[in-house]
Amino acid sequence: MNKHVLIVSPIPSHPQFQGNSARIYRLNQMFQQCGYKVHFVYFCMEGLAPEQRVAMEQDWDYFHYVQPEGPAALPAYGDYFDIDDWYDQRVSILVEQLCTRWKYDVCLVNYVWFSKVLEAVPDDVYKVIDTHDVFGDRHIVAREAGLEPVWFYTTKELEAYALQRADLVIAIQDEEQAYFQSITSTPTEVIGYVTPGQSLIPAKRPASAKVRIGYIGSGNPFNMVSVRTLQEELMEHPEVLEHFDFYLAGTICRSFEPENEVFTIVGMVDDLDDFYRDVDLVINPMVGGTGLKIKSLEALSYGKPLLATVDAMVGITTKEPLHQCQTVEEIVLSLKEFSSTRMQQLLLNSIETFDTYNQTNIHQFRLLFGK
Image (cartoon, rainbow, N blue to C red; front, side, top):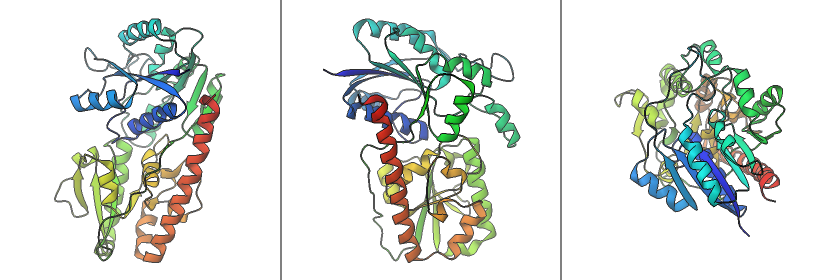
């Protein structure tokens, strides 16, 4: 007899060009591999293009959506959002209707600030919040880093209140698990970025060409600061550019001029496989930020050697020094000594790092939901 999971999200699962969509897509896949029929409810906060709808209808067993009636609300408290400011009660109405048609074993909601939907499902449904990130005092963290807070941010007290709506809280890495455990009595477990089927994508270019280093990401403030720091360091060490080409893809490209002296601007890509196939190495020069850096794990999942800062590898255990650079400058300086032998060792260590991480998190998922 099939099990049924109701997954509710204000973020689409397709396309997977940002970390949160990739996270949602992979967890949905894991539920299917564990024998669940996936019912995916998308609140179209980021729009719904015809091709997105077709893709989600094809990949999930059942697909439903609710269109927002206007832009996301402003912070109810001025300096921060009430926990339910971005929730739409029409999602609850749809979910209540679905619960009269289906007997769900699990209801998983993406993001604590969409957790009000859990109040619309019957008591015998196992209620789960996949947190993705910490939102309590997020605005304070941003301002301490010299950035204006964007997207959603609230207080620890309101975040704790919302977590009590669930039977289980999923943290994306150990540090965040400790935080959630400090503010709620709801059981909290860690499930990182799982990839049910690993895709090894070798570079397709001649080995004699300059080494291509790629970065793909969104234009969020922490990504912007990190990539601009990389740009500044490369300008300080122009000799590195004699041996390496740097390719920039994703929505972050909107903030970089095509004629800049460092990056080849790729822009949006139609297929992640093509992007990773066209680069030899991947770089994540993250400076600060919160959550799990899914772009690091995505690169590793494609079997690509990864250059990364410590901040880009929070929650990911590795023995590779080039995964643990203290600064962006350290990454750039390491490229001066880079060789084909070092690249091969980095590749092997990157693959090993991901295999260990992936198997650990798949095992944890099956312990929680594979019964």
